[in-house]
Image 1 (cartoon, one colour):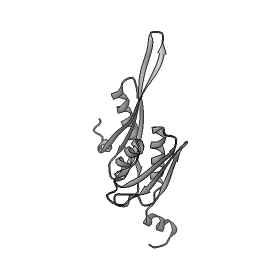
Image 2: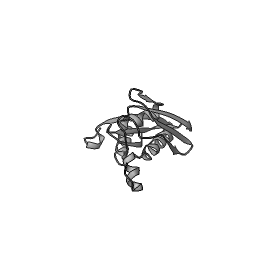
Image 3: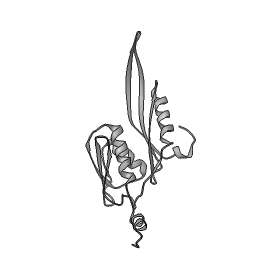
Image 4: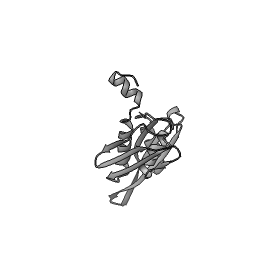
Length: 159
């Protein structure tokens, strides 16, 4: 949408919902959009936008996603270790996979993982199946990832 350098990359609309407000003349509709944005190289973000038309809602969500980007530690085409992301009642289990496995995930988790540039991963979502909560839980799990070098540096030992 915009010419900002951060908006280049992988943008995926996860969900569009219609909301109705009942007024004297009938119903007035508005739309919400949930967008996941990433560069495909370890950076991922999400955004949420509301407007009276779908394209405006998607544009607002994209602008919102450019504000809160998160860095993800990757090991080749997968993640360094198993992790559980949590947000509200949603739990997302992320497990590393061998090369060639592909992305085994539902729609909401798949959008986040592919935007981050992960090509081989196994996932399982438990609890809530709300797309917004699943996206936030997946990003929480990805933020918890640490490489061997990071852990060794934090502990003050050599690998």
